[in-house]
Structures are given as C-alpha cells and as structure tokens.
Length: 208
Length: 201
Image (cartoon, rainbow over all chains, first blue to last red; front, side, top):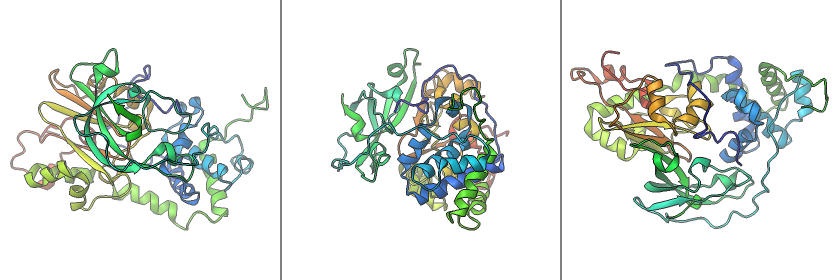
C-alpha cells in the first residue's frame, strides 16, 4: 500500500535527533511492548510480512506521532484482535481508554502464490527497471524507486516474497538483488557521486 | 473523529495500553514465565555495537579475515560467535578514502541486531529514513560527518533480507595498537556510516 511508512525521499521532516549512545530500552514499557509482539507473532504464526504490514496500516497521524515501540504495541494488539486472541473491547476496558489499532487490510487474501522463481533472471551488471505499480497490500518495493532504472550490483539468495506471505499462508520464493540507482536518476535534485542501493525481489523488476 | 462525536473517549496512555495487552495475554496463558525479562536482558546486555567493533578490529589486523568478511559476511561474523535474528544474511561494505557507505531502512527499521544491537531511536524515526536516500551528503554533514566533495557516497536501503554493516577506515597512527584497543575505537555510528573514526577518540 502507499502508506505513511514508505518514507524514502519525503521532505519537510527537519533535523535528525541524533544521539551517540542510548540504552536499548529507555523506558520499561518499551521492552514489554517488544516482548509482547514476539508473543503475539508466535501465537498467531505471523510472517515477517504480516507483522510489517500490521504497522504499515496504522493511521498516518498516529504513525508519525508515536515512536517505534508504540508501533510494535499497535501491531501486537492489532494482530491479537484480528486473529481472535483478544477483543478490542476487552483491551479498551483494561486500558481505561481508547486503544488505537491499525486499519483494515485493503488487499484480498492471496489464495495462490504462483510458481517460485528458481534461479536469478538477472546478473551483476544487468540494467533493470522497477515496475511502476501500486499494490493495495504489503510490498517491500519502496515508492521512490518505482519506474526507475538501475544496475544489479549483487545477486542474493532466494527468499519468500513479502507481498505474498503478508496475505495468507501461501508462499512464493524468488531471488533478490541489490540494485544501484544513481541519485540523479531518482531525484531531480539528486547529487553527483551519490548512489542508492535498494534490495528488490525478482518480480519487482523488468529488463531495461 | 470517534463515534462519540463531541465527547471522544481519550486515548489511553501508552503504558496503560501495554499493561492491558500484557494482562490479557498473560491470562490466556500466552506469556511464558520470565519471557519478558529474559528477552529484555538479552537485548540489553548480549548484543550491541561492542560485537561489531570486534569484527571491525579483526578485519583491520587480519587481511585474510577482512577478505572473508567482505566476501561472505555472515560466515565471517559467525567466526567471532555472532549471529541470529536480523543477522542471517550479512553484507559488509568497506569505506575507503574514495567511497563512503551508509545504511538506512526507509520502509521500517531493519538493522543488523547481532553486531550492532537494537537500532537507536533516531535511526527508526522519519527524518533519518526520509532524508538519507535523498540528501545523504547534506544529512551526513549535519550529523557531524562532512565528506570531501570528491568522496563517492553509497547509501544502502535494507529493503529485503540482507542486513548491512559498514567497515570503517582504520584511523591513522594506530599501528602499535592491539586488536582489543582498536575495537575500543570503533563506534556504533561508524558502523552505520554516519561517522568516520579518528585515533584521538
């Protein structure tokens, strides 16, 4: 989905609140939220894709105004409710207030994954173009590279396609590639001597 | 807007929402005894940038190891005992006088947990994720890492299964230092690629 999580290249955010070191969990609830996500994801057997998509479906304003571990909390609660472990009413009664959950899945369930892609279609040095499409469900293809041409710089192993695994029990396996894009090809203000390498599944790409 | 119109129910504070979910999952018998404490302890004390620093220091002193690290990152990192979730497919990218590498995850917050620990808050927040792929030279300068104009910048967006570690340049005037002393020079930021190292740290 074209969600708020797809942040690459968005403008207007201002300075990075950098700190050279910090505790793993500045507050205890963050550690608990993290562990509870692990509990829920295990109990409902959520794939990595389903987990990430449960964060991506957060209401954009909530996403931008809450930190990472509130994202994890929202994902854990959303998955727990969607899989019938708990009800929202129960959570809200115990929390003593509203408990915002992520929005509904917009994509239909994936019933058939289609055939695996056994070997890589592209090799290092091949010029490829990213498909220009806007799937309603989960994808790991960032918006800022769609329609853009780049060069394969590394061929990786075969991995489960997130777009499929996020939406049911079907799985499809495809090679992934690291694709180098010149900044000047990505942005009108792209700087000389800058490239961005993005890791992409086989079906995101076509020969350029 | 909520269904309650003019009198929306306020959002529960985040600590109370966490406690509510913990209570209901515990009642359902889904939270194993000690799980939260154990999982927290592991990420507070067992993983962190001190692991990555050992990998970097080894690569600086052992050319054969460095070669293996750049060719087969996961296996070379496992030689030092590090691996696990978010570290199953490691690629190590080397900074040189001519090329500077930096890692980001624009879609979420992918990060090499076994060698760097959990990501810092700023790595997960929108400004870093939005800007590093668009204006890395300006952002690096802003973060205290100005680069000469002729240094090529390669940004690595961890959008699939590979997790990246930057191998920083060994600082000058460190010839006499032991591997352990060298590891002490290596910062988390230098392995993300938002800092360069100097011997005087």
